[in-house]
Image (cartoon, rainbow, N blue to C red; front, side, top):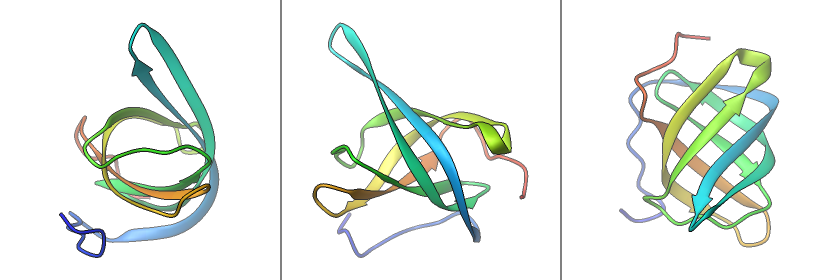
Length: 96
């Protein structure tokens, strides 16, 4: 899917909340902290200082909203500070 094309399952709300993304890299676990920019029932966008490729699977935690979910990277924008669009895989979260 091209970077400009996006398919959302619902509306998103602008927020500014810390988040942590976790993933496996071979035999080790990695994590990066970021800022959630938008949050909706089916996904979110987060600004992080790490590179992801579309299709990657990550675990995300947004403690201030009680959200802990597995997600798929839908799209990315940027180079050193990426904005990453994530689609939740463990079902949708309640409306915020």
